[in-house]
Image (cartoon, rainbow, N blue to C red):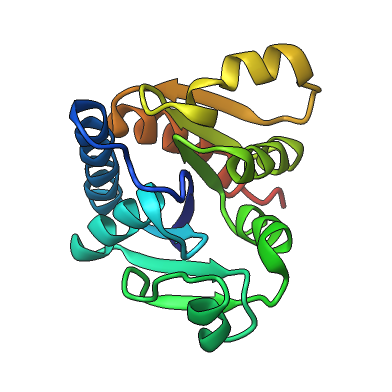
Length: 190
């Protein structure tokens, strides 16, 4: 079975100028890096930087599952104004944004953050509480760059493992290397 990696973060577009160009390139690079691994991508089927990651990953051959807050495709598009073209499959939860976040995080073995604001903060705390392997793509702003502060001020022992790196390839390698021993079946004792 393939490892599921969730990418969460900014649902808004990158700013104009050099900083925005750098963030968009990091999003595309993360999508391509996911394609070089045998994984399934999960996102909130959303817009912005996460959309760019999903679009890049799907175009590079990754199977991309979106988890929607809506109860149907019509509601997904009309009420939430979310796209459908970056995903191979969308699961319509009908749970709203916060409920969707719980389903999304719990469905992933690794959770990667790129930028991100309040919704991503909600996903980060869920991932930490669930003891997930968490990766923060630093240099992208928002939640991804504030992990040290969050962990220092609010952390409790949950078993979560948090990695930070500015390079998508290295971040994914760190997360996958940590996860693999936990997935290796233990030999049966006769």
